[in-house]
Image (tube, rainbow over all chains, first blue to last red; front, top):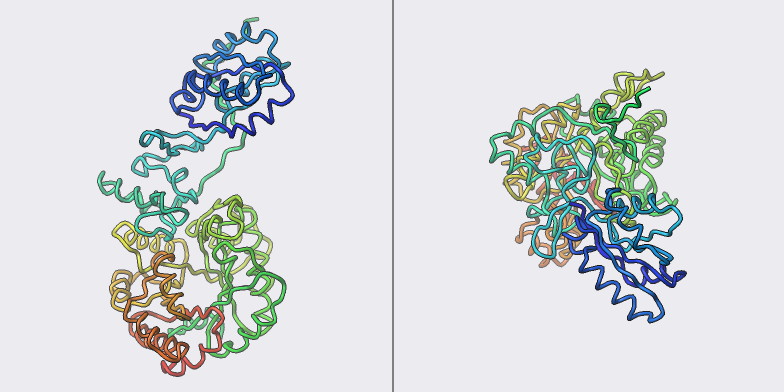
Length: 218
Length: 291
């Protein structure tokens, strides 16, 4: 899932300064699961905004996903006389809503951090950079592109101490994790393959599936 | 004798290392280089060591060639993508650089511009492979070069890995580096000759020259700092005590270095002395070690 964190209240207030009435819109999927922008957080943020500025009109709503048009449509009748939408979705959701309502300012309440998992309550870690060329089958299910601070493809850099990355003692060395995973799986031979060089994709990405495209019938 | 000729001659190799400073003043650096030029086979010039922004390695390497010194251009993958790396390699060759030490590089977060974008488009292994490609007359995309380099490539290895995974990964990577064209290795600093001997037994026969790394211990504090903060460096407590109890610390540091050089003569193919400003002590160390 996509992991996000709420922005500092001061930054949210700064972006809301020009507007008297705003609609705080939550997202019921990733942002809710990582406790950043679901219905609960919508209520908390709305209360915080009102208590900081009694003159602010703050409406609230949530939809199951802000990255799907069929749900975004549900926002239409909630907009009313609100002057801006404060989206509590990831950056993807903010842009999808902004695209649907081009004449409304759609503002981000969250900082989108990464694709990751909940490690333990209150701790999330990054697992996937969406690099477009998955090599997890050769690395024992541990992604070096994401989990090695240098995204190295040909083994450890030698900077680890006690199994931790040179960047932080909080981070395990991904290559040592890969080593132990491959050893466990009896797949260490993958470490001896010829040098890998990654071809980086051009952003923004675009996936086209011809078999799913609607062909116009003439 | 060039560094390549020295390697091919089979002699016991001696290299040193210079770290350019922050700014354009090179007077002191070149003086240090002059003071050791007749005693070493090559001098490495570091590439923004520890991710601290400094004067560049290529310019200083070029200045060393003017002094008749064969430099080893340290090239890290931290700051340049494959376009810039290949271009800098060609530029280095055009300016007289003949030897490359290919490194992945420290993460920028360790240095003085910690929020810089880390590049790592290539890594030490793929960089070595690319040097081989340039040597063969084309770039990574297969385009022909008009005028090609003929670099001698080397790499680093950390013999002081602190667990099974770290050690096995170091050895596997060393093998990959040799396959990718590394002809010599300069190791991370070694203080425990017994542990180094074990390491050398594991890598003997791989077919590349190994120069044991020696960092001159300038103080007890430095030794303790390295033990705590530098991966794979372990200064044994008796050495720290020797330094602590010595009245003349510099003399004690030199004694330790002399013993390391002597010990390495039987274990590997050379020494790489990182004097960190104490370059003037290298000639007497070599004298006392019988080199």
